[in-house]
Image (cartoon, rainbow, N blue to C red; front, side):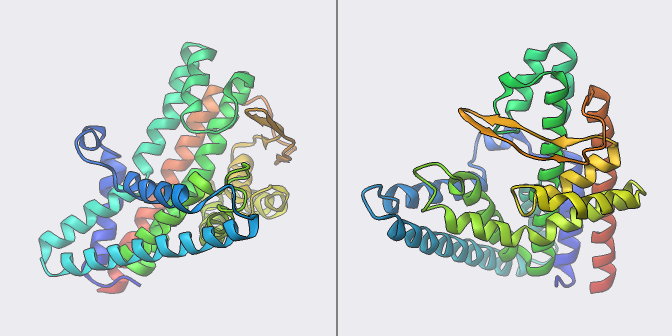
Length: 318
């Protein structure tokens, strides 16, 4: 658990990220840390993921790769936290900036709001905006499909991009935060079922499932609490096991119930068709632009609850 200055840094980082988001002007001049993580993952992928090798060896190589990458990220975080601890108050301020960089409150809100703005102009603009945050084929989506996709992405990324990084920063400081982001980045890059990555990325995918287990359930609980809707938690417990992901169904089902919508359902990823189940199937399928606004309002209250938790951690560590 964080102590003293690190708890203050976490609180300040949460506030800084919520107010400022991810400054694009900064990353035009210096590489984003997650981009550096991605470069390291890509390098090992190209060096160790040899298609000529048997699948078993590629699977073992992938497990070794994700272990090495996670350990390296944790060690970098440990060294950085130790160095910043020597600086006193300026170190706390810098640690807060680092934490803010690895959270996604502001950027997630901006990307989802852009879908509503685009869709208000035209279906084509809405499809383009939603393609920035989902992997499914946007050309197959009608207005309601674009809205559902944006809301589903908001729910899932609240867990992956906000709640989970907060948990690992709170429990383990910068080493935990860096390790989590390395795992999550590796899963997004190699943890899928393509012919190239089915074996090599298995370790990253399974580890990501493991580290996101608590965040997914906490996110669903927070959605239900801030919506003051006990049914949302009940629907999450009922419908989440139907989802192909062991984690994504929890926040998606809770948000669906809180908004009175039915999310999920069949979708396409390029040439691949996925017959996914509907979450909160008794809800309304015809999602509208206003529902994206309602989802963002629920998300905002969830971020406020996270800030309140950070305040409590400061008092607990005093």
